[in-house]
Amino acid sequence: MSSSLIRSTRTRLSLASTPSLARSYAAPNQDVAQGDPKREIIRRVLYPSNIKNRSTPIGTWRPDVGRALQRAIPSVQAHETIERAWLLHKRHIRKAREAEAARKFACMKEAMDVLHDVDLRLYMEANRKDDPRARTREEMEAMKTMKTSEIRALEARIRGLFPRELRIPTDTPSRTGWKYEWKSKKTSTP
Amino acid sequence: MLSRTCSRNVVVGLSLRRALATEATTQTPGQPHENVGRVKKASKPGVSTSVILNRSPILTRPPTPFELAYYSYQARIRRSLHNPFPNDFYFKQGTLTETRFNIEERKRERLAFGPGFLEKEDISEEKRLANIAAVEQLAQQEGEGEELMPRTHAADVQGDVKSLDRRGHRNLYLLLHSVEGGKDVWRFPQGEAEKGLFLHQAAQKELHSACGDNMDAWIVGKTPVGVHKLQNTPSQDPASESEHVVFFFKAHIMAGQVIPTRESIKDFAWLTKEEIGDRVDQHYWDSIKDILSDY
Image (cartoon, rainbow over all chains, first blue to last red; front, side):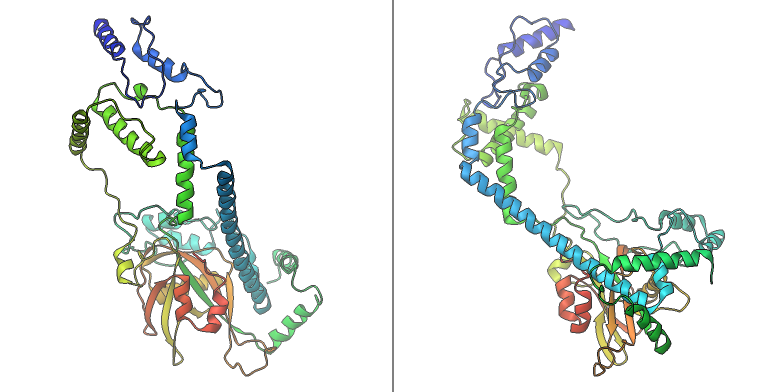
């Protein structure tokens, strides 16, 4: 087995022409021929020989970094203008979102004010904070008569917490699309 | 029911009320309480609950052209600055996967920096073409990857307003076309609140009775999000209390579809905010337009 390793190391060492895109690793050390080539590779990955600048984690740039940057950034002023435009864009989005939230809150406040004037009992109930773990007496009564699947469905929806089925938006829709056939497990509402 | 908890709640409620009314009524704090006493004796307005059933966006928002340009600009800068890729760590030299990676990497570099940036490779033209053919064969052998579904659905093309797959990136709201008292209006599912129930329970019950039990709808909490005062006789002076008040509750639909149960509900539609504005009465729209999400 060691002989095949040595052979493979030799063949790798003889290939001096790395592709033009291999970025600036020094040629492998000719002395270390008997050791495990993997160790040599890992060493070269972690400690490249052409350390030009210590800003990156392993301390190296690509060989044509200056030329690439010239291509990427048009000029200092252009770069700063683009950054300012981006920050302004984010500010617009943020302000719009905050304004929308403020409008919605104002609507809610008005609704609660009107409710307070209309019916105090309903207002008190709307304001009361629920203990998510508590279950009302009606629910306890109903649970005695329900099947296991219904009990599980009831326990899954915790009052005051978001349900698990609320999906996060994705880039592409699911294969099956919207689930139109949905059957309620509960027979009565709590 | 006068228990200790009730009195405590009243104190808490009053302080909460004062805390809520920070900017509005600072001149005459005594008057609202007097009005409540007077109105209760005179005529208690009827209370209805309504549910704003929202289908949240399924798809992410499409980025604007400026955002796309900025992201590709930043990607170019990152590409020019980041560490060189350790080819021989990841790919065994001379294998087809390495050839494939090199071809793809050249494409990415050309896309980022332009055609004139890369040096010519030092392999012959026929070898290059042979490499490309071999990589294509490898792709065929490996089989196709997963096909992604397109972002526009058939319902978008047809304009099917009953579909819940339409406009995946927008918020859709349920609007019912109901006939009541001779007029037919487009509005959210609405109904009178029974005496014994709390508001959110009444809203849930109304939703079930109007739209059927075939929906996984979840009402967000017990607090109403908006209010609409029905003006039966607009000729009366505006100081008098309106006869009927509708409280809106926000709900989310996660699965299922509406099945109209009552005769008075002729039609339903899942609409975005602008489409609702087109169909609904002006007075109703003024009450609900600030509750709905813009996007």
